[in-house]
Each structure stands twice: as C-alpha cells, then as structure tokens.
Length: 211
Image (cartoon, rainbow, N blue to C red; front, side, top):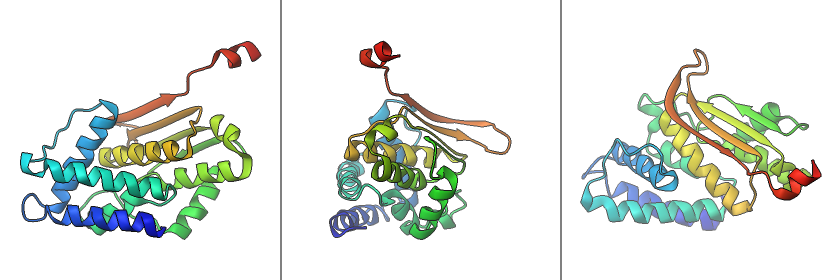
C-alpha cells in the first residue's frame, strides 16, 4: 500500500476506534458497510442502524476509505480494515488473504488467457481486482471492457464490501467490464443468501452496427 493510501487508512482507523465505547467496533463497521452500500446502490435498506451521534463519524469514515481506495486502487483497503477490527476472529466468513497469495490465486483462477473470471468465496474481491489490473497492464482497457466477472460469497457483508471496492477500482481506472456479478450464495448448496449485485455494460449503437 502506498504512503498516501496508508495515511488515509490510518485516519479511517482512528474514526473506527472512536466508536468502540459508543457502539462497538464490529457492530459499527457492520452497520457502516450496510449503510454505505445502500447509499451507493439504493438496494437493500439498512438492517443495522448507526446512532445519530455517530453519523458524522460514518460520513468522515466513508470519505477516508474512498480516498484510500482511489489513492491505491489495487490495495485491499476494506480487507485491511476488517482484519484490524478482528472480523476473522468473530465467527464471520472473512479471512484476510496475504498479497503474495492473492497474486498467485488470481493467476490460477483467471489464468493468462480468456476474458472471464470466476471466484467462489471472494471475500473483499482483491483477487478480482488484481486480475482486472493484470488485464489492463497486459492487454489494455479494450480487453477488460470485453471481460465478464462473477464473484460469490456466502456472507452478505462480504458481498457488500466487494461491491464497494470494485466500484472504487473501476472508477479509479475509468473502465467498465462487459458484465460484473457479485452474488451472495452458498457455493456448495447454491442457496442464495439474499444480497446480489448484477451489472452489464449497455450495448452501444456503434457495437450494434458493427455486429
């Protein structure tokens, strides 16, 4: 993570820590992600409520995290936050993935060829982000514009984190894949868990005429 992103992230962690004795860090983060995802998409009204006296903290936190993600689009900002908050120790399905392991996984999952990416148990989506970055570096924006990604996780919180990080990455790189699906599902039983985001790039007039 570069110094600029780290500075924003340190500020974000200070905001989070300030909620410890008012609401509790994990409870606040869960409610914060719930609310942030709702404001970004208009989907899935918040089940967890942030107290009125912490709303300003939540707004400041969203700005710090956005700044960190834009400063270093290929860093797992939300993964770091959840790890520091101890989510991997609280019975959730989140387990932080070291950067070197992420590099290996995205190569194995996505491969060197093809324009599709699928990952079960996607967590905060860092493997997908690294795969897209690899596509951009090796093949340029047109290749990524023709790509299709499907990410799955059983934890609705991870689905929302993935959506938030992916939106920031794509905005930072000013690219849009052909299709992006982030689905809450038990990858073994295929039981849907109630939270999913589906996005497809609209077909342009030029593309229709070319076809």
